[in-house]
Each structure stands twice: as C-alpha cells, then as structure tokens.
Length: 477
Image (cartoon, rainbow, N blue to C red; front, side, top):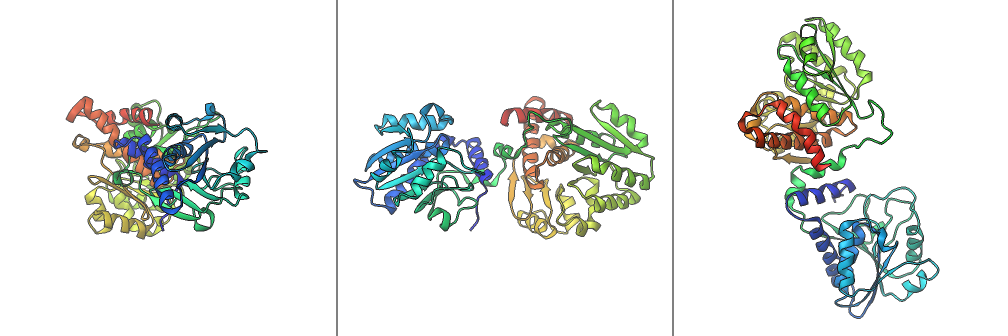
C-alpha cells in the first residue's frame, strides 16, 4: 500500500485548484464522503452523533459532514475553540452553511462536562486536527482526546485521527480518508480505513503545478546572509553567457550568493553581466588549478551546477569527470558535463545528484530513448534524479515521477536550459531535496517562459525567462 506523505496532500489540493477544481468543492466532497461511508458502515437512523471540529480545514470537512448527517440523525457540533478562532476561510464558510442547515453548534466551555456530553452520543465524529501535526499536543485537544478515548463510544475520524504523529491521538473504530492513505496510518492507529475519491484530478498528481511550492523553504525572520543558500557554478570557456544565465536563474528564485568559476580569460566578461556575481577564475588550460579551486570553494557552498558553457574538449571532459567524482555535496550535472558523467556513473550513484539531459543527451549517456519507463528505470538504477528535457519534461528519482507541461516552443532559444539548471541548483542550495527541487524548478522555469512569451512571443530570450521567475514566486508562494 502506497502511503501519501502529508505535504503531498497540500500539493494535490493546490494543483487541483490550479486545474480548475476549487478547494471548497473538495471540502464539500470530503464531508459528503464521510457521511456516505458512515451511512454504509453504521446504523445512523435515529442515532445521536456528536461532531468535534477544530479550526482548520479538517474541521471544515466535519461541518459539511454534520450538515449531511442532520438529514438522517440527531447531530450536534462542538467546537474545540471559539468560532472567531476558526482560521480557515473555507472552514468558516462550511460552518456558516452548517448553522444555516439548523445544526446546533456549541463551543466546549470546559472539560468538566465533556464526559456527560459524550455519554449521550451513539457515535462521535472526530474532525479536530488534520495532517502534519507533530510534537506534544496542546490544550484543549489533548484533554478532549483523552476523554474520547476513554469513552467507549464508536469513533469515526475524518481523513486522519486527530493528533496522529503527536504524543496522544484519537483511537477510532474507523477513519474515512481522502484520495489515498496518509503516511503513518495503520489499522492499529486508525481503525478500519476507508479511502474515498473526492474529485482530485489525476493530472494534479501526474503533473507539476503551484502545489510544488509547498516545499519551497521560506527564510526565517532572523535569517542572515547565506542562510538561503550559496551556489557554485562551474562553466564557461567557449561560451561566456552560459554560466551567467545559470547565476541569473539561481538569483531569480531567492538564493543568497552565487559563485562562478571560469577561465581567467573570460572572468571579466562574466563579471560584467551583473555586479551580483562572485566570479573566481583559474589560468586557462590549467585543469589542475581548476580542480583545486573547485575543492577550495566546496566548503563554502551548499550545491554546485557544473557544465554550462564548458565545451567538449577532451582534457576538459576528463577534468569535469574528476570534479564530479570528487564533489561530495548536492550537484546538478548539465550541458557539457552530461557527457563527462558517462564514465563516472558509479561514482555519483546514491549521491544528491540531478542530471538534466535533453533527448539526445539522454540516449548518449544511458543508451536508451527517453520514454517515461526508461527514465524512471535509469534513475532507479543509478540512484539519481533525472530531469529529462522532453516534451513534456519527465522528472523522477526512480521512485516518484512527475511531468511538467509548462513552457512553450519559444523556449528553444539558447540559454533557457542554463536558467533551468540555475533554478534547480539554487533550490537545492536553499535546502530542498533533488527531486523536489527538480520538479519545482521545471514548473518555475516553464511558467516564467510562458509569462515571457506573453510579452515577447517568439522573440523571447533566456534573460527574459530568468527575469520572469520572481513573478512566478510572487504569484504562487
């Protein structure tokens, strides 16, 4: 049985809304699904049902369920906190509809009479706390849960038992969960588990969208320079613009510092693209010095992007292979470095690696076409994350897979792939795992490209794409 991680639930909700399914519609469907399941599994007619609701969307599901339950049995809702503490706009809307339907709604005034309230019930519906709760549970929830668990009543939980993942949780007879079983749920802690479809489109699961921003690490108010990631870019040589475009992409998604390592002859050219770049150099052709400079810079950064603009000269490829083998932090292997990676696949297996090949590069590197099955099998075999620049993009770590269909034909212009590798590298440097960085990076890059296309049509450039990436963040974060 595949268990759905908590954060993926939020990813699905946001992606469903992006695809045209309002989150309130999902809440309505969830509450109705709880009612239907209870009607199928329990004797509801003339039963007394008490619904305990929290202040978030789990409580909202409970309000909807209570409204439906009121058609066939005697229902009362008890709020764990006062109405003005209901923090979710969707839950507040569901509460209003519940009261309009004539369902009595009370606020728990104290624990002294809670046992008496529960004693009058035949069935208790637990809709207090949803997914992702951890640590020590706060009042009033811990006391309510203790009393519920000692009551001997039939308890049904909504989506997950309240408090699951903390020091105390509701132990229900049955849990009605939505879309998939959630991480951590078992028959022992959740009772009989009933999975119900609530209308999340399959595409919300198969394709990246704004939901992927759930994984974007927001900086703390007390953050200092460097806390939001420091990235090293190794590239340049025949192509001076490529490493600069990588850096532009990295800065566009919020990394704090970008170091660029290029040959001495192009250092000033690369530096001239932006005063934000921290440019290091090595004597042209001195690959030993390139390697030693890379090793010297390694402790001061969180991740590296290697390849853009390096060229395919034989000695450079050998040096690149050596750098890849000796890099012990997360790395994005792009462009010319993809060819150099061919001989060191065994050295990168199991490390935090993202490889970003287009179709031809994928076949040259792995010897097979870039179909979904092949990309996933190769990623699993070599234990790397692959962001295949196919149409649509295929992103997989060998266990999970998503596709990206943002982007447009105008992005065939040179340099958009460099921007993409910079975005992915920056997200890793900010603390995201390679797979999540690759899937979010693909969405940001493609969506930025679509925004640029609206303005520039087929005249867009890679600089235009990098310039739109902050707008993607502003729109969806």
